[in-house]
Image 1 (cartoon, rainbow, N blue to C red):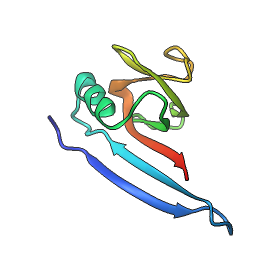
Image 2: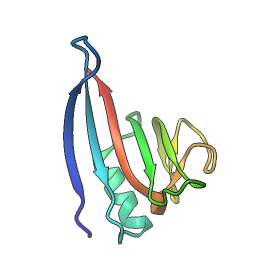
Image 3: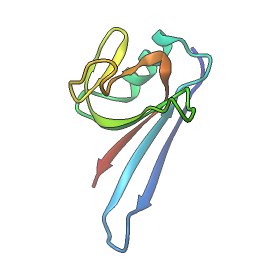
Length: 103
């Protein structure tokens, strides 16, 4: 299985003491759909609030989706109970997934 980058970021938002914790999972470029799915399932759970970035980022094709993981479907990561093409993402098209939690 290809290696992946997994890092934890801590940052402060504005002048308040509210901080967020964000966990990023970067999917290797050579990962196929099954490998990407396995990595996502290993690092995230249903109910996690995430931001998903697309591997193919051009001006006319950008996918930055955020929402709650509601399912690990066979071909795609389901976000906010949305079908593929309406907010959910195909595993082979995912570049990174970031988990966002408020403390």
